[in-house]
Image 1 (spheres, one colour):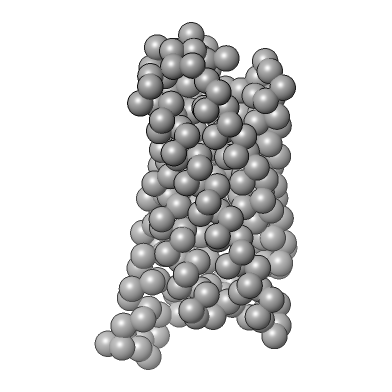
Image 2: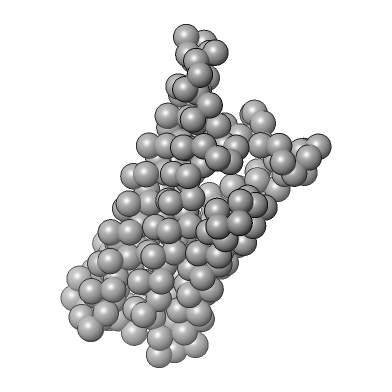
Length: 219
């Protein structure tokens, strides 16, 4: 029993999960379109698709943070320590990635800054400061969040499936760090499978879970 899982918390869970699913699907479609348009795998995705991806990430973050808040409200008293950590790490992800992508989306397009040598720090080409911060956000903070959320779930077929998907998503996202270790950013695609593909399914199941749940119960 989780008294914090009120009617409002249930609605927040449904809306945030559905919003996450929708935006991740749009992001995945845009990402695939951008990758297909590249003449070489070493090239970064160009505009306008790159800017669309930036905007989608910024829009996605409030939904993902709200989703973890709903998970925290739904969690049993025994697992609330883990769910609170999940909220904190998701908040760190949101703050870092929104700041990074908002700066790239705005500053890098300003004519006044064109030709400045420091703009290279914002390039999504390895190695760069922007790329390193993006890796910290999605290959460190994201997996820590979902791995902390995983212990909250279990007991039924649906909740066990969510737990397995959370763990798989986190492990794959951590796997993206292998690109940094060996200097091959193609290995970051392992992480993308985790926080785009697998997490999409987890968010969908969370939407179903919250829709079926009764306020005041954590099952």
